[in-house]
Amino acid sequence: MTMDSHSPVTVYVPRDSAARSVGADAVADALRQATAGQDRPVEVVRNGSRGMLWLEPLVEVATPAGRVGYGPVTPSDVESLLAAGLLDGGDHPLRRGVVDELPWLARQKRVTFARIGITDPLSTEDYLRHGGLAGLRCALGLPRAEVIAEVTESGLRGRGGAGFPAGVKWKTVSECSDELKFVCCNADEGDSGTFADRMVMEGDPFMLIEGMTIAAHAVGAREGYVYIRSEYPDAVATMRAAIDIARRNNWLGERILGSDLTFDLHVRVGAGAYICGEETSMLESLEGKRGMVRSKPPIPALEGLFGKPTVVNNVLTLATVPVIMARGAKAYQELGVQRSRGTQVFQLGGNIARGGIVETAFGVTLRELVEDYGGGTLSGRPVRTVQVGGPLGAYLPASMFDLPMDYEAFAEAGAMLGHGGVVVFDDTVDMAAQARFAMEFCSVESCGKCTPCRVGSVRGVEVIDRIVAGEDRDDNLALLEDLCELMTDGSLCAMGGLTPMPVRSAITHFSDDFLARDARTAVRTARTSGARTEDTA
Image 1 (spheres, rainbow, N blue to C red):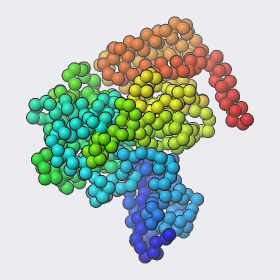
Image 2 (cartoon, one colour):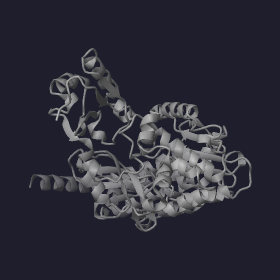
Image 3 (cartoon, rainbow, N blue to C red):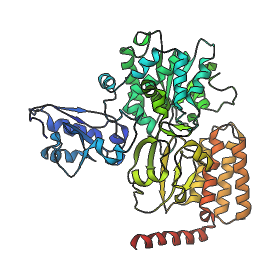
Image 4 (cartoon, rainbow, N blue to C red):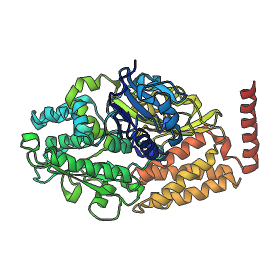
């Protein structure tokens, strides 16, 4: 079914930085130029990304059948797309069909990402039309204790990696008698293979603002900060613009939406330190100090920013709160398994054919994510390992790919879910090099406050180098294990405490890679040649 040749049409081109990095701005400009002056009005809307990053830039056109997608589109494709009837969803080699019906998207359970890729991120009309502010209006009509009870009952846990129950943290802050309290969002998304926080801030910033405002009402805070890593300039610009718009619409400021709540937000930009992903280091940086870990106790909920009670949550955690308040705790709790309730936003990256965002209920297996959604490796070679949870996460072999993605199952397997990053490696990866990288990464990014992390990581690099050089292999492997134990038990925070996790998993599951170089080369040659034989069989 086609539209009348003079009826207006809306075309969507993502403004997400992943899409922009592969030419989305040029595609949008080409579409505007090619359709300018036509009898048929064409509006080009810059939306967030749907998360199918292998199709970016993904151009969508609104049709009576739904939004039809084309991708990946280059500026040189625009002429042929228009000639083929793009504005009516016409056929073309780049046509992907109705986007909502694509199996990759249709199988997901999008809760936090429900609006992202659909709306104009800075349009208040779009936000309200798609359910925006329903959660805040509900929360403002409830006593603070009931809001906290709803968040607690939902089972929402911190999506930043630690998995601590959000409601418990809020309750602790709410019970403090201090007049001044803060809500801080840690958007210092530094883990390798993670980009969901960025996509939320660039694709649905009002949702984060709404979640932080609900938190402020629940705990009695009047001021909040979004701490964004400096490597995210588009997210910084979008959040600042959204906060200005929210102030103008009385979504922030004095007597929000006619209530008694007064709350304002500010954006602060980090200086590039990975350690500021840790909450106390972030607070130090917010106070204008060098990002260094604080000893606990006291916890930030009691003595946080400037020594005042502070809620510190991740972007995904706070952005999910409006949905919980709008739909009710029970609806959210019905998703997931055991103590891992709701959905997780998994981010597929590395050597993978179809990288991007998969939001689904906890309990999906690693195999489903890597093989069904991800399509295996981009190189076409067999998957050898996947690292889940960022640079401090464990390397899991293919034999463990049926592991369900939930906090407890991963903990039992000696791994962690973390922020939901899933990085894929094929059979050419050198796992001794990956273990060395973990220690080297820690040595570079350590804040330097505690000796096990600061010195242990440097010694770890040296010991791994001796192992792969064939020097006293057994003795040095034993020494490396002692070093890992010391770092795990003695470090002040997860930077040093979790660095042994990828090292130990590499040794446990890929011990051949820690042989002396000559022997290791022989084993790898035999392994990869065997894979080639299987491929051609």
